[in-house]
Length: 81
Image (cartoon, rainbow, N blue to C red; front, side, top):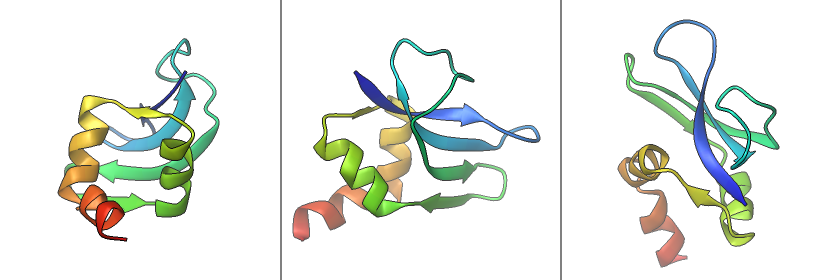
């Protein structure tokens, strides 16, 4: 099963949103990078087509990634189109 989860990168408090196998560790090899999240600067970048692709294939976002996507109004856009 594939999940959309956070993966730490670079300096403290900076994360990538990745599609990764459930059995992999947090810093393990990912299938694809689909965005990044910086809570200090409050910046989020989302690759919407890639996220939609993985969600359509059955990927499940973790709780934190779901909250990030909700704040970016991702699911609102998805249901209206």
